[in-house]
Image (cartoon, rainbow, N blue to C red; front, top):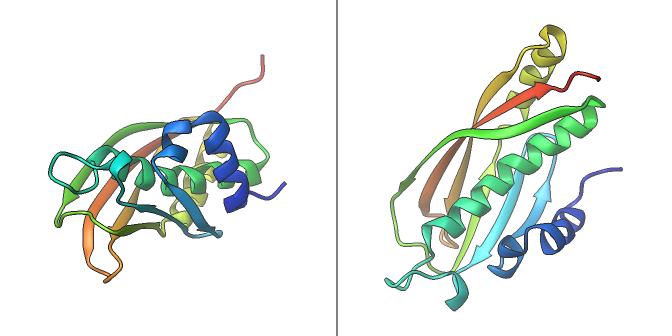
Amino acid sequence: MKLTPKKINTFNLLKLPSVFFTGIRVKTITDTSCTATVKHRWINQNPFKSMFWAVQGMAAELTTGALMLMKIKESGKNISMLVANNNATFTKKATGRITFTCTDGNKIDAAITKAIETGEGQTVWMQSIGTNTDGVEVSVFNFEWSIKVKQKK
């Protein structure tokens, strides 16, 4: 079963309602990239009338996590995934529609291959960049994903 934006967004409605109700939606997912958008609204704003940093973080993490999930699914192996570390930089107030894009899909392939070959956990840093409708960068999020092949019991 192929991972599609519609399937991811439905999953979010059912399993991650805070993602869904703050307006975060996956728009595209390919072998190498994932894009999600979120519009600044009352439900996701901070007291300074811009998008709350945590909402931006959810959208950014979703772009990296969806890619990771898709690649794990394609591997056919039982692999666990977990965010081990993250950091962010904010450069402009996030207002209007913000688009988060991660283009690090190729990084995951090598980590999964090595995890399968060695049986050892692997980590991979992935980046998601948030831009406004004018194409101006508003935030950059980096996530260190840890993956490990689960052993059969």
